[in-house]
Image (cartoon, rainbow, N blue to C red; front, side, top):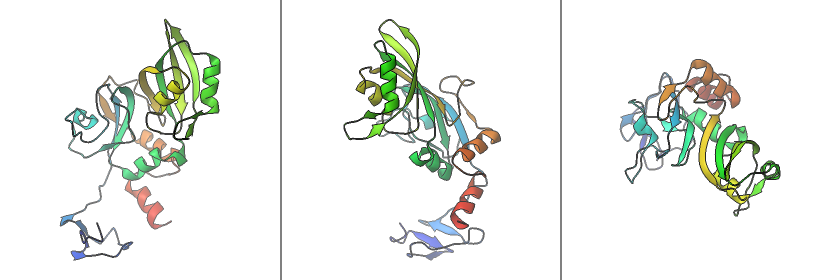
Length: 232
């Protein structure tokens, strides 16, 4: 976009990549529109229901998680949950935090409860811990435990740190126990015990600070971005 001449600093078009600006005094424009720096960010915890798309828009006209939020702020989901998966979902306009929460380097814990086909035995739980190899030669691991067994199915809890597409479903299918129902019950320490399905709330300051500490930051919002990107 810079090379295309769509970015201007102080009304002057720039084509130099890596141009350094003073965020306190310089004005940056994109396609003629002045870009502002928010004085605060919005952090939303949602209990995502099944049948809703984890996306900002859907070209097939299906309901998205953004449709469930009564806010004019432009937030986006951090990571994703499948259409038929419910549970903990974080949404924000803080791109710097979202990047770190989804990067595998920071090993953010995600905990799921899954009803799966068949009677799961401890040897299958051990296979999850040792690692499952997918067809694309990716090896993923998870810490699992059996919660209870019912007729022809088992409820298990699985904790993972990766974020591969359809990871839980692929892992369970690989060990012969396809997922019947899936819910994420914890993400980075956040739970939705206090939220009904399809409802949401803003995070507390303490919760936001906890997220930043988990990804190695001591400050939240744009201040952290400034410190890490401009002061090294």
